[in-house]
Amino acid sequence: MAEEVKLFKTLSSPFALRVDWALRLKGIQYESVLEDLSDKSDLLLQNNPVYKKVPVLLHNGQSISESLIILEYIEETWKQDPLLPQDPYARARARFWAKFGDDKVLPSLWTAFISEGKEQEAALAEASENLQKLEGELNGKKFFGGDNIGYLDIALGWLANLITVLEEISSLKLVDGERFPLLLAWMKEFSDVPLIKDCWPPHDKLIPRFIAHRQVYRMKPSST
Image (cartoon, rainbow, N blue to C red; front, side, top):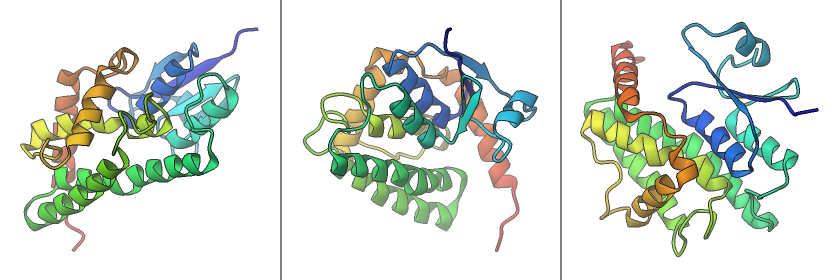
């Protein structure tokens, strides 16, 4: 009996992209289910009743949510082409930096994107400091995983696409060759891998979506 593997995602979700890449790197056949988060399907709500968001992986009737947890599930379920290093310390470091990307890097970049004035300046300084830490992790390596794409490359892969979108809309220069030569080279190397490139959402569709996101956040009243 064939396995049922479905991925609930949206066009613009960088977190769902992680799951796309992991499944493809392991050669897993799956069905993509595009969701409209302004009109969530009953199936999405049924399979992620706590957070009610994408991505959700449905495997033989069992649902798993939260992208980094899904990556771990994929790694443990399908053993071929391992994404995580074999060494326990290296595995722990990969998980640490993946969480750092979600907890520190993405929020600082997003705040810089949606804010103005002094708030934006502070966010840019924080984002630069965070990105510098990732720059250091690439020292002497082609990918975060070494010579090949691994778990941490997938976890941070959103940088290679989202940075260009945010820069184009905001006119900010978030990653440049002078400050982040290794990170910029990694973004290009990662983006040019055919399996990765095949998953990128159309750039011309992302731009208006993120312009709309920015406008919504800028219209929200200040909490101060």
